[in-house]
Amino acid sequence: MYSAILARSFNKNEKRKLGIWAFFSCFFIGFTFCILLKSYYRSPLPVLNIQHSRGTASKMQWIKSTNNDQKKSVASNAGKWDAHDLESRVTNSSKESNDQETRATNSSEKSDSQDQTTIVTSSTVEIDNHDQKARVTNSLRKSVEVIQGTKIKPLLVPICKFSEPRSDFCEINDEDIRIQGNYSNIFIISSHRLSKNISAEDGSWRIRPYARKPDSFAMSSVREFSVKPSAYSSEEAIPECTKNHSIPGIVFSVGGYSGNTYHDFADILVPLYITTRHFNGKVKFLVAIDNKPWWLQKYRILLTALSKYDIIDINRDREIHCFRSMIVGLKAHDEFGFDPSRPGPDGIHTMPSFTRFLRRVYSLERDTMPKLKDEEERKARLFILARMKTRTFVNVDELATEARSLGYDVEVAEAGGSVEQFSKILNSFDVLLTVHGAGLTNTVFLPQRAVVIQVVPLGLEWDAEHDFELPARAMNLRYLKYKISVNESTLIEKYPVDHPVIRDPLLYRKQGWVVFKTIYLVAQNVSLDISKFRTTLLKALELLHE
Image (cartoon, rainbow, N blue to C red; front, top):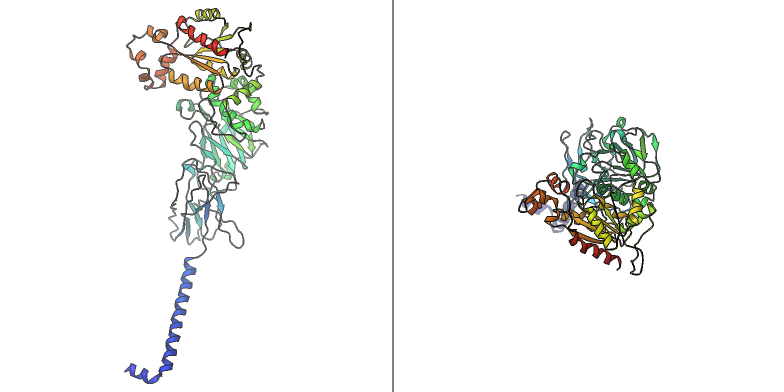
């Protein structure tokens, strides 16, 4: 019936017009609906930009939660995050028309009038190589929360590195740094503040500034420092400066095995050279002396060459020293050595450059030993470094007599006196001969092309190679090794030839360092087969004439 009525009410042209108007009306309604939905889904949201050292991008999204009591953040990364080496910096990428900087932060504070919590779960990671680079540690990797409608604060910029095999260190630049030495606290006053409700324990790095990290026994005697960003400390806990310094500060410890010449160089002096040489003396040392005040005096000349300023005994000092930049801990490469593939700010560090530095610091006469000529009347000078307590030469007098018969000018002595005095004595010799031990560290004072003879006791082949052979060769010294036979070890007087101590030293190394050391380093002396050793002495003479 309605169709008939409509058919009678409209003619053919009027029906066409009605259809066109209906089409445009539907299109307009649909278009308006899309615009409204678009504005809803595309409401402006901030973006957090983070950069890491490998340039891998990680994207995060912003989501909203209407639950005020439950705040959580879920991060999804497109690349791998390195637990220690990730270098990151929080930058602003959401530039509004008023150019305000939007910052992201962990916020544990709740607003009474808060209706919604906006949670950062993702962002775009970018790189800014011109600003300070910082290293992200697991302990400070936090999700970022923002209260809707409030200013976003930056994520804390971490500056400590824990991935190095031999040492941990923090490198802090362009900040207000305050060290409270007698409490082992170092505060970083930064504009990068986070929630004050985060405890200092959760938000601090802990550093033992001594370069023998894998050795838990050595590290147990090294004082621990807490590096605390101000974001994790109450304002009342942050001390006021009492002394300001315009030069960088270096914090390190002389704990551990310091006092042993080898460890003095391998764990402290070589790492200190790597860490500070590029400052050209314009740096302040803050040293945790750990009841070894004599150590600073022993190496006073060398320390003075690396720093022009008085050393602070940070254990006893009650001042609040303030710096703009600081390194807590020492950078280290190889065991008693340098890695040429890791240049410092002033270029590549090598053993020859280090020993050249030492010869200049101690005013040593000979930098390189000239070739001995057959027609010269001068005899080759042999220094036999005699150990008096462990791994001694039982027949050192016979050894000296044999060497003199071959034409050597021989001196037998124990390392002693000041470093300055002994370095001058040793630098005047052409050949250094001794049993494996810390005394071989003094090779750093020999002129280049001098000869080093290391007598290797039973069971110490690996130690001899890594502790002294490799460094000696790196110093451009000629190296000779004499590995003793079973009959030249005094252990044969205590154990039969088929005993595991004689036959399998590795078995005792696996039982721990204390057991191994007691047998092979403490209880063993050397009685050289002089006729057999004669060949090594002749080889050294041959090298001196080459």
